[in-house]
Structures are given as structure tokens and as C-alpha cells.
Amino acid sequence: MSETNANSNSKLHGLWALTNRELKKWYKAPVIFALSIVQPILWMGLLGKALNIGALFDPNSGSFPPLMLSPPLTVGQQVQLGQYFSGFTKYMFGASDYFSFMAVGMVAFSALFTTAFSGMSVVWDRRLGFLNKALSTPVSRAVIIFSKVLSATLRSMFQAGLIVVIALAFGLQFGEGFNPLYILGVFAMMFLLCVGLSSLFIAITIRSTRMETPMAVMNLITLPMMFASNAFFPTRFMPDWLQTVAKFNPMTYTTDAVRQLLIFATDWGQVGTDFLYVGVFAVIVATMGIVLSWRFLSK
Amino acid sequence: MSEIVKAEGLTKVFNKHLTAVDHVSFSVKHGEIFGFLGPNGAGKTTTINMLITILKPTEGKATVLGFDIAKQNGAVRNVIGVVPQEYTADEDLTGLENILLCSDMYGIPRRIAKERAEDLLKLVELTEFKDKKVQTFSGGMRRRLELACGLINRPKILFLDEPTLGLDVQTRTATWNYIRKLKQEYGMTLFMTTHYLEEADSLCDRVAIIDHGKIVVVGPPEELKHSLGGDIITIGIKEDADVSELIGKVENVKEVKKENGSYRIKAENGEVTAPSIIETLRKNGYNVAKLSLTEPTLNEVYLEYTGKSMRDAEESPEAFRAQRMTMWRARH
Image (cartoon, rainbow over all chains, first blue to last red; front, side):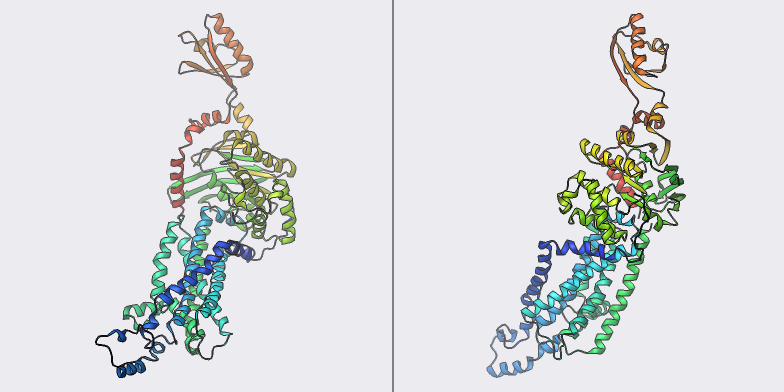
């Protein structure tokens, strides 16, 4: 059993094998795969249709609040109010309807949850001994971490694409001057965000040996990140302190870039700023996450 | 190279106060099965984890095939095979997919990996199950799959951490045969840890008994047992009298101890000595009520060197788990 090893010693060997191991758990398991498709549909249905914020400002909908005033408005007042409020949704959300606004927010939202799970799979690998096994092979420590990041990123990107398609079916309206090539921009943005987020979650959870820790961390981080951003509501209507928080939240920039590309009249200067911010976030957090995890794994 | 592994003063201290491995020195020779025997928590796994480069030693040094485990860990990883204590195979993948995943971690080209996987599956007799998901495998099959994974890079030395932990007696014996085959047919060197006395006795060429992080004695099982000075005869008489002195005069008897109304006698050539003890007792008017003759096991060796029996040293599973959690936490 002793002959020379003709093995490749490239620094990246094993990256795809380890990434694909994670992905197989997803695409080879029909139930999990189906659930990952159903989840965004449910969320979009619930948040976009149940929280029908658009209807509040639409004078043509039966639930336009001024119509319920008593004594009832005169026809003249109704017409006047109607003129006043038409275009209100556009002013508030920058889109012709709330659903389009929210559906795009969903893209970043799904990324947040998918990447949070990458932290959990690290804990699993530790508990089951797979991590130690991998550490005893010539696979680089950075590759072990990066395979987790990459698999979460690929999953999120797939989900992002899926959400756009589903949202279209539900009535998403593209902005003026939309070009199908902009979709590539959306994927690029998702890539940056997911690399950053999953590195963050992995760095946080790699030290824990119990399943409960990443769960608690996930709950603690995900919801504030979601709502202290422009994903579901424009930040300029938020209190000042929350606006400040949102200003630092990478979710805000991601969502803005995706909106600029898909449903707004694209402001390229703004898209550039968004990409710069999320890019810097991704590079810093990924470097930090990988260095921290690496140091931990090389103990 | 005759010395495959050489450790000098290898030490691991967790959290600055928990000394798991305390200055151990030993060497593993080419082509032998070397065993670390000791109760749970004695430091066996910590030692193996240092040798396979997962843990860095706090002090001391060790080489594997001449490569320093701390400074040349990449080189070490390339030439060793590891079969961990846990079942690490991915349950969602098939047997073959798991072996190929291992081969990818070593960067083995796919064509070569496939050939080797076929050979290894045949070796561990899993060929007909190779396309079944590991979920459906029994404990013994999983153990064999781990063995195959550990051999994919054609290692010069295979490290096995508790290779039969949790297996039933039959499966354990079968696993021993696979391990023996590796040594006999492929001339492999194996380093294993175990807390099963019979396993160390029947498999290992040389055994190091480890207790509280220290090696208390090293040697071939036969020699260790022999060094105790022969067999153990336990005898009980009907009469209520102390016959220790009388027994002590019999030829070949080395030591007599009275324990709970019976006599524990250390003697050479027990099969011959026992009848002469009976003879002597009868001549002096005593009647033997019961007699047993045991050849010493490694448990007696363990007892001799640590002052306690392996079984007593083995704590309850709960205490063991609690201790292990402490070790886990200490790592961070």
C-alpha cells in the first residue's frame, strides 16, 4: 500500500468536492429542495399580499381609508383626494406598487436565512467528527471554510433567481428601461452579500459545539438586520436612530441595488455606491471570518 | 526507515491547567500494530489528534515518517490515513460517493480514485452496497467504510481511534480481521487506541498502557503479561485456617495473598503448580473447596502498574460524557 502519491497539491483542491457535498444535501433531497422553493412563495404571499400597504394609499381600492370617514366625503372631495393620492405609492416606494417593492426586498431576505444555515452546518460537522476528519487531510483550512461559504452563496443565488421569477408571476413590474442583463447585476450583488454574511455566521458559530448556539445567534441577528433596513419599508420614514442603523446595514445597500436594477429607473451612481459598500463589507467580513476560523482550526 | 512514529515528551495541556497528555515518549516500528491502551479519558484520543496534526502539542515533539507534526503538518497529512472514533461518513451520500469525497480531499485524480475505490470496496466487502446511502448501513458497515476512506491515499501508516467502539462482539472480531489483513497482506503500520483489553491483546504487536496522560509501560502483550510472573491460581479451602505459609512453600509459587476467604496465588506454570498445591494441602489435612486457574490478562498488567483495575478506572458513561464536555470546552 505504499507507492508515491501522484496527488495534486494545488491550494484549492477539494473546494468543489466539499462545496458539492453541501449542495447535494439540498438538491438531492426532494423535500428540502421543494421547501426551499415554497418558502419564498409563502413569504411573498404573506408579506406582499397580506400586508397590503399599497391599498392604503390607492384611492381606487375599496379600502382607501378616507372613504370610511363619517360623514362620508362628497364626490367632489373624493375626486380631489383621488388626484392628490394618485402617484402617492410611487412617491413613497419609488415603485408603482408595494408588491414590487417588497418582492425585491425578499431577495436579500432569503439570502439572510440561507446563509444563517451555513453556520449550523459547521456545528453539525464538528459534532459528527467530519470536521476533524477533514482537518487530518491535506485540504487547506481555508478551503474547508470557503466551501461552506460558497455552497450557501450558490444556494442563495439560485433562490434569488427563483424569487424574481415567482414575483413576476405574482405581478412584479420591472422599471422603465429594464434590461434582462441587469439580472446579472442582481446575481453579482447577491454573491457579494452572501459571501459576507455566511463568513460572518461561520465565524460566529465555529466555536460552538451545540446546536442551540447558532440558532440563538440566528434569531438574534436576522430579524433586526431585516427590519432595520429598507427591505420592507423605505428608511426615510423611519425614526432617525433607526435610519442611522439602516445606513450601516449591508442589507439596505443590497436591496437598494437590486431595486435600482429591477424596478426603479436605474440610478447608476447609486448602484455604484451600493456595490462599493457591499463589496467592502464582503471583503472585510470574509477575510475576518476566514482568518478567525483558520486560527481556531489550527489550534 | 524503521521508526515510523517517534514521540519525545509529547504534551498537551488544555486551558493551561488540564493536562491531557503528559510527556509521553514512544516509537512505532515499521509494519507493526502499535496500541494505546487505557481507560476513557486517559489521553489516547488527544495523543492521536496530535499525531494526525489536528491538535498542536503544548510541549515536546513527534515525527511521522520523519516529518515534524508541528512544522511539516502538510507533509504528514499526505502520508497518513485516519479512521476516527466517530462515524464521519456523510449519511446523505452513498458509500462510493463518500470514498470519492475523501479522495478529493487528498486531491487524487478522479480516474485513479475510482480504481482505488473499487479495490477498497472489495477489501472491506462493501462492493454490493456501494450505491446505497450510508443511512442504511449498519455499524459494522460504517466502520468498514471509514476504513476504506482512511486508505484512499495509500497511507504508509493508518491511525485508528477506538476502531471497534460500540460494535457487538461478532462485528468486532470481523473488524479485527480486516485490520490484521492490512498488516499481513499490505505490510502496513498501524497505530490504534483502544480501551478494550482483549482487543489490545489479540491485535497489537506492542501495547503502551496509558493512564492519566502518562505511559506506564510499553511492550508486547505477551511479554507484559509474562513479566507479572506467571499465572494466577485462586483457591478456597473448607477448613477455617490460614494456609498461606503452607502454599508459599510449594515449588513455583511466587506470592500468596489471602483475599475474602480465598487465596490468590501467583505461580509459574499454573497447570503443573495447581495440582501440587492441592496435593500439599491434602497431605496436611485440608480439603480444597474450589479452584480456578487464570492466565494473566492485560487487566492484571494494568492493575500491577496503576494500582487499579481497568474496569474500575472506567467511569460511568455520564461521568465520561461530562469529562469529555470539559475537554471540549477547554479547547476554546
